[in-house]
Length: 313
Image 1 (cartoon, rainbow, N blue to C red):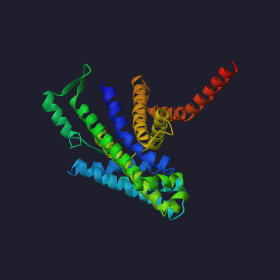
Image 2: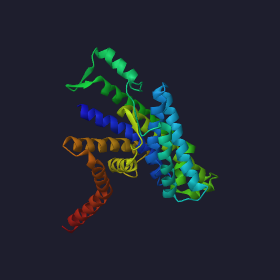
Image 3: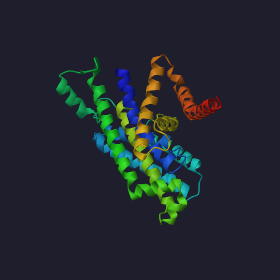
Image 4: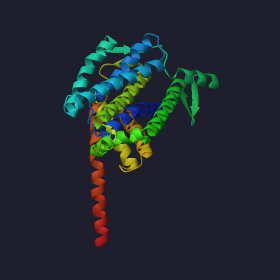
């Protein structure tokens, strides 16, 4: 049960990364590679501030601001300096590697015996249960793991609702329109380039939030922890779209992305449980992404063949 709780917790934390990528990749149609650097930026800022005695909530807010700043710079490189999308992201991601090292002062910061966002729920659960374990469906789960799980659910639900409400406003509609139909947005008197910058800031702010929570959950921040996260987020979005469909409403799309991230993490956890070598984790992740990309086309083709066969019969 601890494995399942851990997989769900990690999935909820990384779903914030996927929601950020949903904004950049799907809504404003921007191939943003800054993600691999901004998630580490959120983790490094939080780790340093928490180690210096600041509240984890303050560390989270500063991390979100740092990620938003990084996304804004990527957008400015694209809109003001006419640098291609991918190159803009690569430039920022490369710069963030050195920036993260500067922030941390070293390649790794352990977070041992420090205050995290799950401390209050853990104290409450310990008080209610009177021990260090809690019963769940007949299984005994450590109170600490359950506290992190509950904290992740609360944060993820709140972020999902706030994002949903924001994207339904006139401002959010203009943001989505900047990716779907920039000419229409300009005709309405909205600067689509500004919307791209703001969209990337919002997206990378969410990614940095995910990095901040990830560092607190794992108990360390590492300069290499962002490698491959963009692929992870993309796979989660594709799996989520397979759940709810590409043309579903905004609310269902957000829910689908969250569920897709959790499912993807469960698949990885099961593979590790069955003896997968951790060194092969990125390879297996790439394989899952490949399946997520091509499987919908295969199923569509197979369904068409079956339909034609039934008609001929």
